Amino acid sequence: MKLNRARRITVLVTATAVMAGTAACGGNDSGGDSATGTISFTWWGGDDRAEKYQQAVALFEKANPDIKVKTSFTDFPNYWTARSTEAAGRALPDVMQMDLSYLREYSENGHLADLSQFSDIDTSGFDEAQLQAGTVDDELLGLSAGTNTFALFVNPALIEKAGVEPLPEDYTWEQYNDWILEVAAKGVKTEDGQPIVGSGDYRGALWIFIQWLVQKGVDPYTDDGQIAFTQDHIREWLALGEAPDTAKAFASASRTTQLKPKSPFLVSEQATELNWDNFTASYITDMDTEVELMPVPTGANGSKEMFWKPSMLLSISNNSEHKTAAAKLTDFLTTDPEVGKIFGNSRGVPSNQAQRDAVVSEEGSADALTTAYEKDVADSVTAETPIPIKGFGSLEATWLTLSEDLAYDKISPDEFVEQFWAEAQQATQ
Image (cartoon, rainbow, N blue to C red; front, side):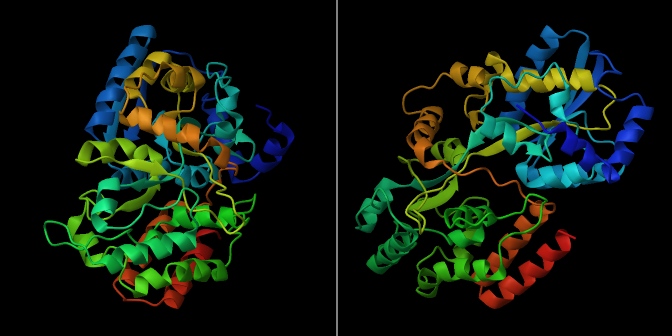
């Protein structure tokens, strides 16, 4: 991986320079510590991920007896609340799971160490695209643990019950809308009396809007972290789903709210759902029916223009006093084959080749399904991963809230655009 060091130095002569100076005075640079002591490592996720990380950390401590790892985890919302508090006090954990939505925000505030400076981190087994996805201003700030891309999850049995033909292989957004309207028009209900719908309102996920922009040839963000799309792009996106929305053909807002934390797709009331492909395992675990994966709808230019998104990254905090030990742990968790066996595809398909090769997939398992899907769509994954702007995490939540308000007819599409745009402008100042 080649990094433009001259540019990096220029960029760092800003607020980040204060942080770099502080770290140097404190002896926290990568060459000033040793691979010993106790380091902290935290992640978001449930009990299953925690069990897997504990197994992986135990292997690491056995291989590195001079390093002890103190672990912690919580759910996604509380995770970022805790990190925000720690960041304010320059007390972030030594190693932490990082989401792409927050990478630029934490990088601009100088919280993350450049992983390319650590000789203990071997990036040779990673695709260049995955390394670039963790790079901001020529610094490798997050190492991808796994990849995912969007998929249309399909419940074939429910489609048959609804009495419609499956979607064609290379369907467009317009064909998807027509199909959703057709499912609703059939008026078929589940055994519990709930109407079978073709989809939820896909407009409610900011990342799906980003995927649609990429298909249109619109770069969502500028290189210096500003918004590159316009208010008209948001209006066009909202108008795309107007027909099924007006016809009440999407899963209703009230039913979707009633079922949380599940979804109408998860309880077999909704025939398809757009989501990241690393959700395959949870769908297969929770649904008592066959699930298939299809690529996203084709864009206006006739291509999918999909992209690989790191399902999660690992980062080292700049305030760490044990960066060498932290680098060893980061490398181990992202490159060791035994760790690859432990996690399978539960962190996304492993980004590192050695871990990818180590995954043992039983036929019909979630791991096998996800791996096969990513192989099938590889030729359609032609776009670079958009690196979100500073504040993307809160904007993602705002987009979701406004989408729910739109679904309940509390706001108009114009009010959606106005309110989101105002917050987006504030976030990027």
